[in-house]
Length: 312
Image (tube, rainbow, N blue to C red; front, top):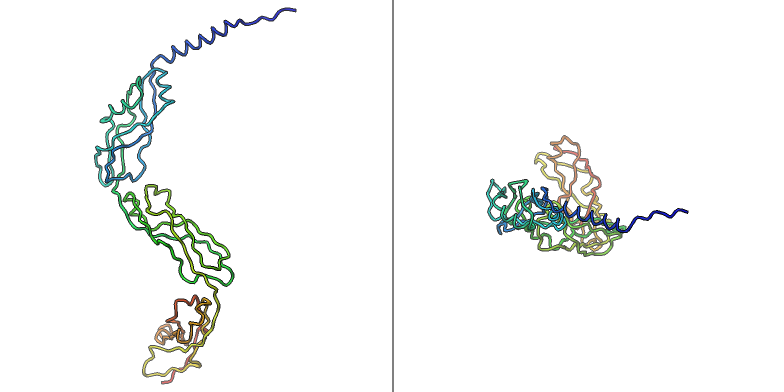
C-alpha cells in the first residue's frame, strides 16, 4: 500500500501568517467612507419644547485607516449638537448651521478619523412654548347590567379633568383624554374602579400630573309604574271652548326602586298646545310631559293623541 501524502503543519502556519499579514497591510491603508451617528441635542432654550421629532441621524464623510473605520463602526457613539444659537424662520420654525459646529463634531469622532464633509448643512427644529391646560377626561365603558338593573345617576369621574403640560401645538388641539376601557358584566351593585389615562401615541410630548382616574357608578333595580295624570290645554282663544272626552291621560314610567314611592300625580305635568295643533292643521291634541323628576328614566303617554270638540 502507498502511504498517504500529508500536508506539513508548517504550510498551515505559513497560510495563517500570510493571511494575518495581508489583513495588517489592508487595514493599515487609508480609506474614504461614510459613517452615520445618532444625534443628541443640547442647550435647547429652557422656555422652548420640541413640538415634533427632529432629525435623528447625521452622516459624515470620513477618512481613516481600515482599523479606525472598523472600530468606529463597532463602537459608534452619538454626536451632540448645540441648539442654543437658533435662527427663526417664523412661527415655531428654527434652524442652525452645522458648519458652525464642525470643530465640535470633529472632536467627538474617534482619534485617527478625519471628517471630510457633512452630508447636510442645516438642522431644522420645530419649537414651541411650554403650555399647561386642564383637559377633561372621557370614560370608555362597556357595562353589562344584571336583568332589571341600571345606572341610577350619571357616571362620576374623579378627577373629571387633569392638568396637562406640553408643546403648545399639541395642547391647543387637545379637547379631552380618554380613559382606558372599563368592562364589567352582570352589574347589580355600585362600583368604583381605577383606570389609566390614555395618551395618544401621536402626542408623545405630553406630561400629565396624574396618570389614573376613578370611575364610579350608582346602580339600582328599576321597575315600571303607571299614573293617571290630568292635562291642561294652553293657547286656546277666548272665543272658543274645547271639550275632550277625557281630562286625564295614563303615564307609564320606569324608575329606580328606591325612588318609586317619591312619584305621584303631582310629580308630573302634562300639557297640550292648541296653537301647535292649529298650525300643523291637526284634528287632535298632542299631550306632552313638560315636567318630571330627573329620576324618571323613561316614560310613555297613553293615548298620545286626544280628540276634541270646539264649541263657539
